[in-house]
Image 1 (tube, rainbow, N blue to C red):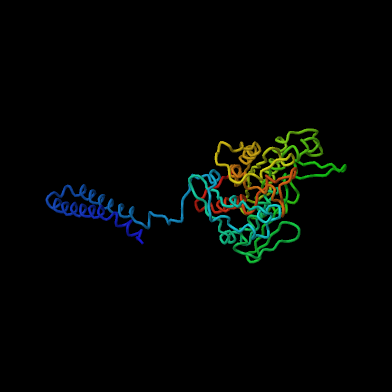
Image 2 (image 1 turned 135 degrees about the vertical axis):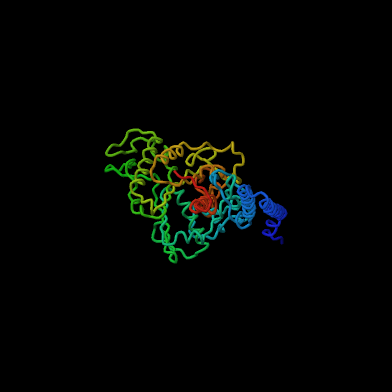
Length: 410
């Protein structure tokens, strides 16, 4: 094998030798000249000094040690890691589809009978740079003695379970406490928790048993975790007319239940409540705040409750012009984030998920699932292993961004 260091240095030897000979010639000539013309001493000394300086500067510039980075380190000073494409990679998935006991039944597509496994073989590749493969050992060291908390809807549950499966590959013994999603790694004294808060703000039941959404009040449980080391929020999928009763007698501010309010308006109010809570309660010297963007759905021919399907989708979208439009809700989110005083790291996975119409559970929601007329298909959550693994890879790259990987910060 060629020695890269020797090649790099020897390549510059001829030019270095020439410079040395020229410098010696000038110095000797100058000495002779000085004996006969002493008045020119200052000028010639300056010339000799300049040439000598240039020689040593040239030698240092061509030093292999000084100029060549280790091949494993790549600098990405202008790279947007959320703008890219999916590429086929036969080394994927990161963990076997049957191996992780922390994947709940509805996301365990392989165990539920899915056998077209091409969807497992894709990884996210940013345009113009690479991101590191998830290193479970390094991540565990970062989490030592710390607490990471996911807050949001069932898509964050997708991401949480993916992260546990990644970490379990390095440290197999994981404890899950009670009925809640609390995972504890004893050897590292670290925990990962999930708070279910699909709207982030408080769902409320009135005395007449009617349920409302308090747009001005945060979900109560969240306050218990405000001193966590990492907070990863999301919301979006529940902000639709079906989940909000078309905005009729559902959205509440103070004691007022609005007769009618547009869902988009309510979403903005709720996000501002969340932003104010973060700005007021989170200690940024201890806690890093993340917000994961909206993950696209791919119902064909209807929605989840109107016979929408995705079971025939077996490969990603390849033509970017066919991607769904960027969601208005995420434009609202970005506006709110830009107005906050707390730095929030934005995991903008929206575009990456728009390609992956092939990676939803569809009919594979439980063992023995078969295509049945009228049966509800899941085209909003994701199979595990699968797309949420890339979210944790992007989280990993963002956490280690000080080593050369950009992250979008508001």
